[in-house]
Amino acid sequence: MADNDKRKIDIPWATLLPLAAVLAGVIATYKPLVSERPAVPSEKTSPVIAAEDVDARLWQDPIGVAQKQTASLDEQIEKGVAKTAESHDICALTNLLCQRVSTFQGHVLLLAVMLNVGPYSEQAESRLRTRQAVLEGLSESGFVPVDGEHIGYVTATWPPPETKKGFS
Image (cartoon, rainbow, N blue to C red; front, side, top):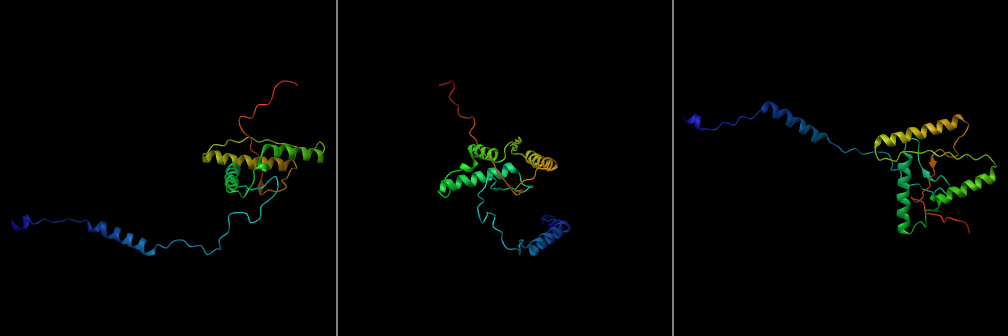
């Protein structure tokens, strides 16, 4: 009867010992990944003063890159480092078009490509495919970009400001 009063603890040692060994092995061999490469600064070392001043490689989402650049520019304006974002205003595009029309009489092509600006990965992938398709189509027609690693963008207020109607 004395043996029956004593509680016996049944521990599944056959399961716990291998799990403890695996856990000890993971903890003992875990080392954080350390890169031996020197750090590369993510910001441009020298600013680009041009109509296409935003770094955008072909594998990058053009809308995402433009939004990131706009946020960075807004932050610089708030800090007082940059004055205004005039180079990305819609008026800058009209001035550039007027300049090109006066330089190249009758040889200016403005191709507007409309993109879906949704936040989902499928929409970003669609923008990448559209960008590549437009570039390949233009290349087949003999058009090549002056600088393939940078893009330009313009912003405009929406809805557009109302103009005065009527004649004076």
